[in-house]
Image 1 (cartoon, rainbow, N blue to C red):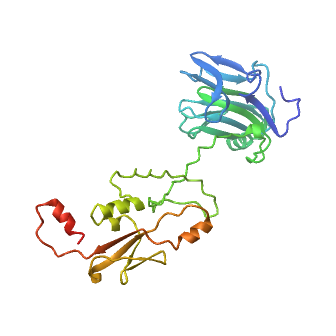
Image 2: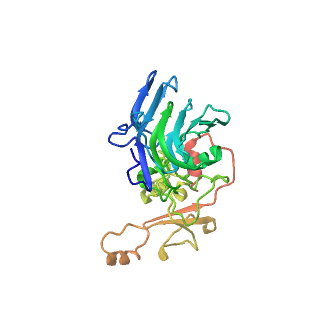
Length: 338
């Protein structure tokens, strides 16, 4: 078939992704099957042959027993997948004495047996996809001390999944092979880096990437603010006045500005205000609360309003000494303002 053709580089004998991959092959699938489908591991078309008996389900090239391949390239390369079942293949070659020799390779063979015209040898396939490289010239010289001339026939028995079978004049690296001769495995999904928030402590055993590598954006959900409580104090001036008039110490807690009183004079916002007389004894005056009126208008009007006097002056006196609580609630309230 190929003796009269130019042989150099790579010569494909079977490609599952081709238009008619079994054009030059004889198919026997008694008690077996043959199908072409998309492999999920390499995302490419593959050919699978299987059966209960490896001797009754096989592919043979060329079709007719009267034909020969006539391939002089010494390297047979097969891209196949291990199905964890019995599998075997045979290669028939011719040496420099015009004698036909046959190499039979099987994964159920335990040791190598060399006979006069045939050699049986074991093969161990890894899990998943494998690239089997068979040096025909080397095996012919080591087994029979003869020189390899050409390959005559090739037989692939069940059970195996095939991507490509080809011959090469020399072994090539992955970079030297054409893209269609390589195996491409999909990349696994990238793992997201852990999101470390201020509230969380990073795991000391976690290995982080280099500093030059850009970190992925990490968005941490913030806890929603708690709704204001119904009992929260009102910080407005009006509330301070009402609380003071109601008779209690809530004027100081309401947020109104307080400054120590000096001789009954109240200073709010560094502007002297009306004098405040709290009771007959000024020595008991502790703090003086001034409430400025709100000035409306422009900024110029607001400057003039700074000199306005406070309309209200609330003074807190020293708390009286502890005594027994009064049975009359109104009497206890009045005593706090004396």
